[in-house]
Image 1 (cartoon, rainbow, N blue to C red):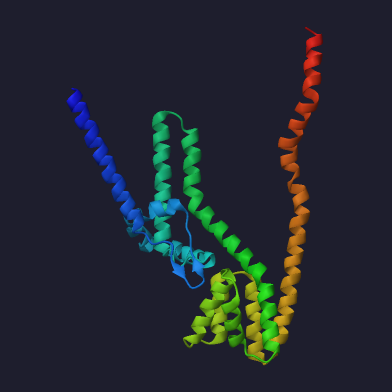
Image 2 (cartoon, rainbow, N blue to C red):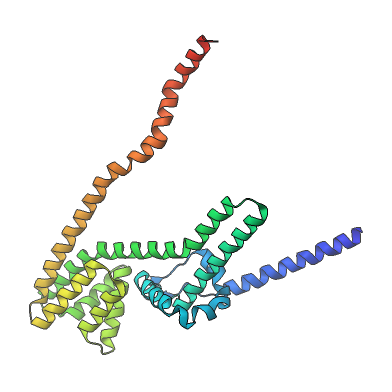
Amino acid sequence: MPVLSLVAALCAGISCGCVVCFLGRRISEVGVEKKRDFGEKRVPLVFRLVLPFSGITRRIASSSGTALWRKSEQVRLNMAGYADVFTPEDFIGIRILFAGIALVLLFLGALSGRIMIPFLMGVLIAVYPGVWMSSTIKARQLSIMKALPNLLDLLTLSVESGRDLLSSLRDILGRRRPDALGEELMLAFREIQLGRKRSEALRAMAERVRQIDLTATVNAICQADELGVSIGQQLRIQSDMQRAKRFSLAEKIANEASVKIIIPVVLFILPAVFIILLGPLLLQTAGLFK
C-alpha cells in the first residue's frame, strides 16, 4: 500500500507538471504585447491566460450569426486602440470563454448548494471583458481630449509661421511623447504618405476614434481646406474652443467632488466619530443601571 500510494502521488505530480508546462508554453506563444513606434499595448493577465484557448470558440466567433457582433467589436477595438492586438474573432472568443467559465461556476455552485457567491463571481467574470473595453475606450478618449488643445497650439504656431500642415504635423509628432492622439495622427499621416487624400485620412481617423472634440476639429480643418479658408485661423479657433471646454470639464469635476464625498463621509467617517465620542459615555451610562 505505501508503494502504491507513492506511485500514485508520483504520477499525479508528473501529470500536474506536464499540464503546467503545456499551459506555460501556450501562454508564452501568445504575442499580445505588440510594440510599435508609438509604444506598446498591454492587456490584462487573464486575457493572456484565456487567449490560447480562443481557438475553441473561433468557429462560433467566425460564423455568419455573429457578423453584427464582429462589426460592433471591431468599432470598439478601433476606439480603444487595440485593433492591432485583437481581431474581432479573438475578442469575441475571449468573451465566450469568460461566459463559459461563469456557467461552470454557476453549475458548481448549484451542486454545492451555495449559489450566491458563485453567482456573483460568475456575473463579474462574464461582464469583465466588456467592462474592461468600455473603461479603456473612456480613458483613451479622455486622454485625446486633454492632449488636443496643446497639439492644436503647436500646429497653429507652425502653420502661421509659413509651414504647411503635413510637415508641421510630422515635426510635432516626432518631438511629442507617445500618446493616444499621437498614435492616431501618426496612422493618418502614414495613410497620407501612401497616397490617400488628406481630408479622407483625417475623416477616417475621426470615424475610427469617435471622440467628439477630435471629430469637430477634423471637420473644421476639412471644411477650411475645401473652402480655401486659412487653416491657421481655424486651428486657432478650435484650440481656444477645446481649451475652454477642457477647463469647463475640470470645473464640473471639481464641483462634483464635494457632493460625491458626502457618501463615504456619512457611511464610514461619521459612524467612527460617533463611536469614539459617544462610546465611552454610553458604556458609563450602561454601568450606572447595573
